Image (cartoon, rainbow, N blue to C red; front, side, top):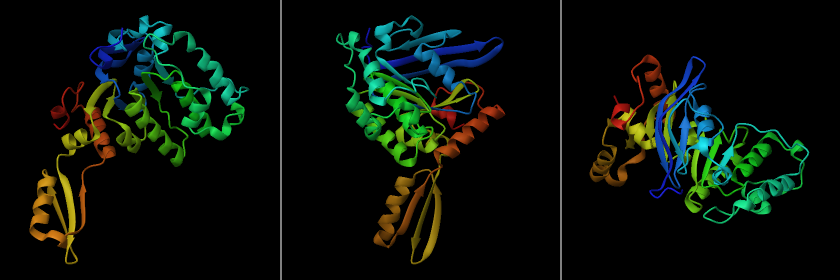
Length: 309
């Protein structure tokens, strides 16, 4: 059943144990239609395990999970037709040509058209969408690493999914390809109302793409909020820099907007080289992970107020 309140992902107290090792400890979060969530965390934090459980590829040890209103362990083929998955790596079908493979895989979605399920992308339209126009007739074996990764993204998008999972999708992308990918994610979220949950180690990318950032460490979500919210909660104060008559000034304040307004009210156009700087997302991320490792954050963070402690 389609969720009536716009909630696409609903995860509560998710736990995972391999033999005697606990990998996930009570992970919980929600995502709504058209929302972009980026999951950050050190290697081994449990990011890929979390995605595999939500995708229905791995059985959880405990907890409640709803994906498009369905428990992934009970998801049928019609449910799978509504989600897209971009794995960390996929190296099959080397002898296929790009257009042939997308046409073949796209045909698998046709039996599930109608009844609220979106029609799949056409091969040529999708090839253009991911920037493989010049490689449409190329064999997959000769694609570069970045082009192969674009094809991985195309395969994940084939069924025009309502929910798209991506595990480090821009690994191997050059700067131009990464920029095109960011534009594509914004288009999917804004125009297609596709919900996106992705992992990345690129913090600049996370800041550009995410409506919300989930920071996972030691199998727990230690922070959940927008980049701006997390920065304000952890860093608190901003640094304002400006110059007047060739003199340079620096002021630290928790109310930067008010301070800048008063500064211009006093000096007007004489203010030069104004810069307002908060801690970067990278600094915030490293601070939170260090706090977790030192035991200052000993469980899942439920509010942004807790993040700032």
